[in-house]
Image (cartoon, rainbow, N blue to C red; front, side):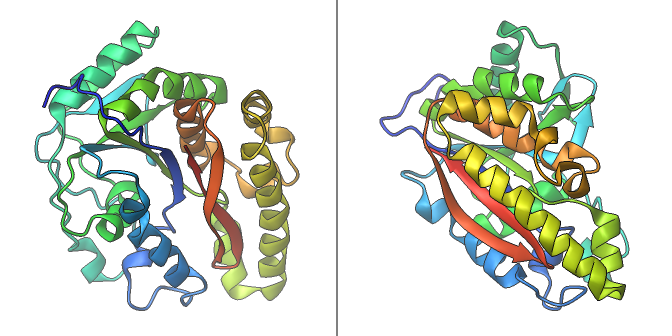
Amino acid sequence: MSSETTTTETLPTIFFPHGGGPWPLMDRPLGGDEGLAELAGYLRGINVALPRPPRAVLIISAHWEAPVATVMTAAQPPMLYDYYGFPKETYEFVWPAPGAPEIAANVRERLEAAGFTTAVDPERGFDHGTFVPLMLADPAASIPTFQLSLLRGLDPAKHLALGRALAPLREQGVLIAGSGMSYHNLPRFQAAFRDPSVGEQVARESRVFDEWLVESVLAEPDTRHGRLLEWERAPAARACHPREEHLLPLMVVAGAGGDAAATLPYRGAVLGASVSAVHFG
């Protein structure tokens, strides 16, 4: 099938929380379940809810940044266990999905036509922002999958523009997915295990930020994009994202979603923090 093949049903773009390290895949997550079962249930249902099976999945993961927009090009990407301190069995997960080098080449062409400098990484493996959620969404590892890096500097405007350049892929059967978390403050997460008062603070701050985020993505497209560009003005923004790499995949997905309406297929609490998934289209 040509990389320019179009379909009759345009796929949505999606942003999902991947749950922290390998937690959603563990029988006994560190710190207890605390909402991870509900998150895992949402992730298992992603492909079922799509209007048609994707011919490929393009993941923008919070766990890959590069100086320029860099595309994974391995035909059989290896595993990248980019977490630490977890049980031995979590370093033995295997998710052998094929890559999509032809579509990756098309991604580069589109991004360069939009003014982005690009590069390829033929050695890059699936990081946990990809393999953890997709082991649940596509346990057979049957759908070709590849990653696109974030841009160092984490400029929200550039990531919205990345998404806009990728939007035509939706009509070609490519699912564009951002993997991150709408709350990501690891020191507070860790402190909350020891101090219930910190847990209450996490719950409070994440809730007000998540409410702002939901209001923003449900707004009309011009308002939506404007609010996302100024996300630092949101209540508790920096308390929830001391560094915004887990929020930036949402910017790419929102840009690729264009004027499509947003839906909220998952809203929950993971380890006490309010988090949401957003689909556009």
